Image (cartoon, rainbow, N blue to C red; front, top):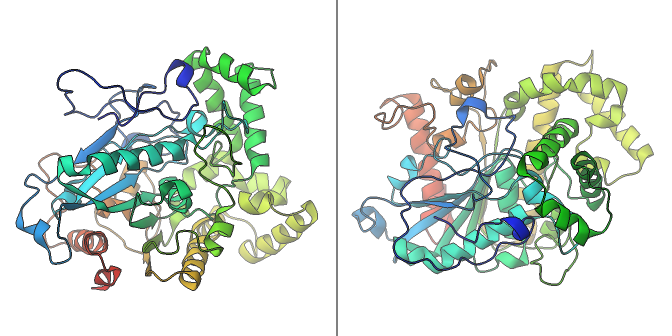
Length: 467
């Protein structure tokens, strides 16, 4: 279902506008096109049905009988709990489709699952530090979706007072940033963050970084103006193929991520999302009253091994030692301090010589594990609501990540693996396969993960999740 007017023509790079009413009944029984993108990560794990700028769509998955006995738990009085899930893939690609985000496991437990497409890459995060092209539109799209849920929840049997916002990878970062925004107050009750936090190390919200990426993109698309209004005027008339080719080049040159969220000033007519760096907001107590689950996997960066080898990260670091530092560090310290920190990091992780496996351990710790622990520590120190943490360290028999990406690694859980036990990977499972084979370790893990999440979503008191 469309949750806002499609951002076409003069609405490119603008904040989403309310839907125009339509006559009759809108047939919304099939997933629509995904947003324009250049996918370097998921490959055959994703199976989109089409690509279009008319991609602002929500997928609402409701249990067959929304009033069955599972919806009458003691802790749930009216309507079903709602999970709004933000897809990942580096702020550059992905969709909310059920190929990777099958709702079957959760709806069978009496939860409404809403996934959605939002603007990504250059369309979602190009920032010219101006009203015409403000940046952070991907996050604004999520705010728009949450407002849409508030207006329509009861129409599909949901409880607008019991909305959990969740995400995985950069979708988890987006969920965290949205929860920290003043614009989201009253739109959600709790958050679940899977392998990504706003203070994470694999991106930076620095305006200086956003400007450098924007300059690179405008050069490749052939726009020389420095006037934001003129740039926007040219961009709305630039063919999609030309924009996406420039986006592809920037994505390849930038490395793991390119267009990302950015700290922004107040602007007339634009909803402000990120008014300070995420770490500062957390330490000041923003969103301190939202119960939270923060999760990581034990070997996150095994998922990116092929990308790490393709980019020759070891060679890049050998040429420029500062390249080993997380972007949020690089853009917050002086060059001399960056050199000092990079030497400490290399000495710690590359003792005896650099290898891809050593870099993967460093990547897991610095980009995911350490930021997640710091977030939990900061939030628990300033807030009153419960903060739960988990580490997913499980060797599954049917490993969708290993199979889908043709990876091999000795053990542990890589990036995305925990999600596959909460949301069904329909792209790799036959339609008649209800789940993992019964009474297997995989089936038990699916039960544990979904029960943990559903208890957290369903009950007003987050203490119920501890069972």
